[in-house]
Length: 213
Figure 1 (cartoon, rainbow, N blue to C red):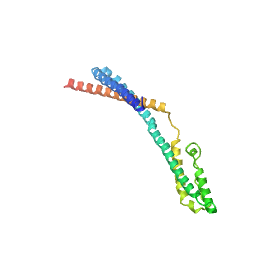
Figure 2: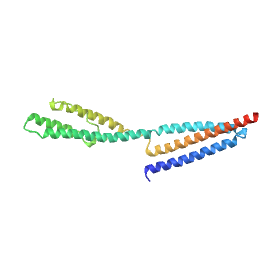
Figure 3: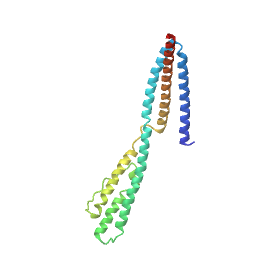
Figure 4: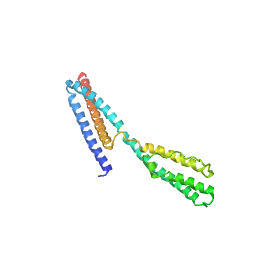
């Protein structure tokens, strides 16, 4: 069974139970409206419905983390894409810098600088290991003046994406699922109680007006 099929099945079961409960509450309210002794009963049901509805709303707000968690999943994908983009950029410039005449000391130093930068960016920075700090052009290499700012901006983006991607979950997947189902049932129960009480009040008021006329 796929996730989509499971979700649709869960919706169908919850909706069926909820609609049945609402129908039962409406019919019960209509029947009890003939007897004034049920006023306290339906007032109590209304109070309980409000309380259950509040709990259901709170549970729904807590389970909202499921939606927020998808943002973290997107951050993990973005982190990977940004890392490979930055790694390609540093490897490309390293290849160019090291393909020149190494007999020239300045060119050799440039190759060394680009190699250090490229080697500092490995797959480990996407895991729990600390992201490298911003690179500094300590040798005052002119070739790095325009290159390092772009690399450092990429590192900043990776740090932020990694912070979001590695943010711990408030609830695990099973707890979020149970909370979502509970909040749906709570909302249906609250609505059923309110609907039954409303029908009870409406039918009683209509019966009293007919009797008065």
